[in-house]
Image 1 (cartoon, rainbow, N blue to C red):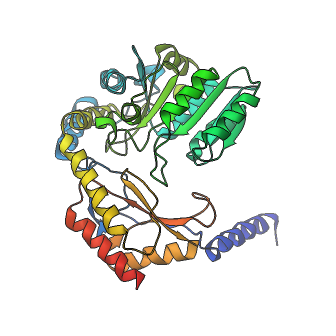
Image 2 (cartoon, one colour):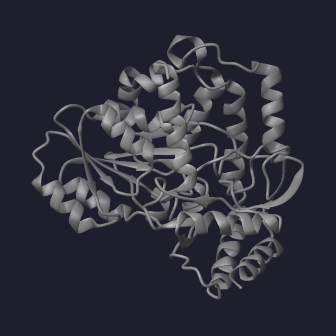
Image 3 (cartoon, rainbow, N blue to C red):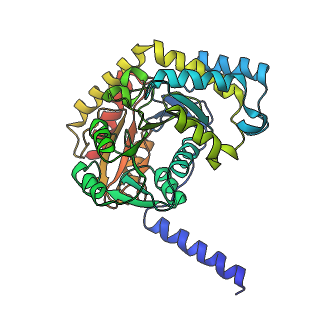
Length: 391
């Protein structure tokens, strides 16, 4: 066997082992826009798989804004923001986002092509060799990757354990410290104790980096988890995504003007990335107007969350406490979670199975995502189907 053939055989063996362990992944191809009901490879499904929490991904006003912007601005940015890709819609959106989230007085904002790039920018711009990043164990992977790329020491603490975090902060002699947390944890749906985290950041002279990918647009009257927790501070560096509740694509960071200028001047994942098309910024501005002005969508979403949780009490699986659109149904073994997802799919319902390494070993689950686009009847259909699977 040649060297190349040997290396390919190693990859194939590793992939086979993943499939045997119930960890194989596959893609399903949508043949319709996102929504509560989608078409997947020609089959109609009731979907509880998307992060489109407010049903904005195919909203007519947002689509119209993108269409008009494509005619006005074209479909490509052409270059990075710092070369010639920063268009008037980008600038206007950044001003609107900073004013809407307002993590501190006089905050600025910077838009990115993805939340992953935004978090890499924050961590690598604000931390370096000899510094320390204190991270919740259930943080999103990009926060950990950003910490590792920064070359700072990554110190992880047990999930939402403030005593453990404080002990680690007390023991640290790092000249710069960053406390880094998801605001809404993407696989559990629970919310970080932001007031307590800010208190610790103040006491130990640390930055508080908040990834609000799953809170922006939903919590705090749409302004996100900071407004929900009623915290503001110049120490807060806030990241929100624009492809979930906002329904479009991209992300943004908003913080004190000096922090944002530091990212603009030094963050490699900002400087060396082509800007997102201006048409997306126009679409986000349209969705942001809906987030600000249409409280009925959030009210309906929270009604559906309560309806699902009330019905889930009759199911044999554990549904951890979550007041957000993310409702995990813990199954345990990876194979069992996949089997349950397949049973639902056979009934025309799409709920993804989440397995390690995305979640810890032994906690494979169905990640049920609710949307304002769902109806009461949709939630009842899901609960009935889960009851049938439990028999």
